[in-house]
Image (cartoon, rainbow, N blue to C red; front, side, top):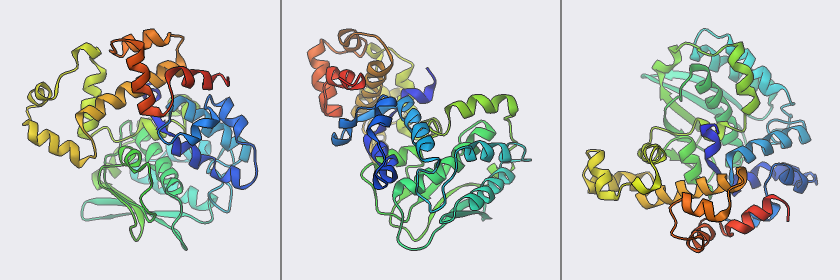
Amino acid sequence: MEEWEKGTIAISFVDEALHSMRQRGMDTESLLLQAGIAPRWLHEPHARVAAANYGRLWYLIAHAMDDEFFGMDSHPMRVGSFNMLCRSALHSANLGKALERMLVFLRLVLDDMSATLTEQDGLARIAISDSGRPRRMFAYGAFLMIVHGIGSWLIGRRIQLLSADFRCEEPLASLDYKIRFCDQARFSQPQTSITFDAACLALPIVQNQRTLQPFLREAPGNLLVKYSNHDSLAATIRRRLRQLPLTEWSDFGSLSQQLNTPASTLRRKLSQEGQSYQAIKDNLRRDLAINYLSGSAKSIEDIAISLGFADSSAFHRAFKKWTGSSPGEHRRALSGD
């Protein structure tokens, strides 16, 4: 399984992706079922879906609407545009030129949103121009996710963002957006933009025609998880835990010693990211459980054991707390029962 597939996506992202289809009276339930997402999860505020299922939904919506921007612009981004966007950027001399090409391409394809790349005082800034009332967070997020995700893929590593501002109000899933972009994400700002170290603009393109096809098979649905903020403290701890059996997960005191950080400092830094050590452990177990239930034939009892629960009943209680449904209900919903 690819690393990006191990993550999970908040159900609000699913709801937002379907927004324009519902406005047009299009059938959304069949697409959800084809993607392996139970329609009733939309009414469970804590529900989450496997990233691979969300990627399939992204593909299905784009083809149903013939719009890879989900109907969020007055001019549709026709199916095939993302492919051409990647190809237009692939042969650039460096990241800066690639980003400029992508923004020109999107300016030609979309009518209501455009963005510019500027450089000042050692910072590169991509700022979105749009008029009228602020758009949904999902529109800004999707636009920047595409540009930032392709740019990160082109140079073979994540472009570390230093800040992210959005015109819209803070969404319910703001923590997920902060994980995707950066901890310093701010909302209700005058303009939507992201900033990063201008030195990145000179980085060479490391991808080619051979690596393009595997990327296109997974994109753009994988971009929400694959190029998330892996530099945060929470992400560092999560990676450390992923490499260990659950029986070897450290307590907080031992973790602080391993990271050579006083416990009080570690707790404060995690709090600044909106996280706690217990939440990181719970979220990782939750994501592993969802992926096991969605993509494996393991019994619920075996999943409970592999996740370190004393028995299946304890797993049932924890999973219901995490997602609003039991493991059995989650698995039955995947099969449409």
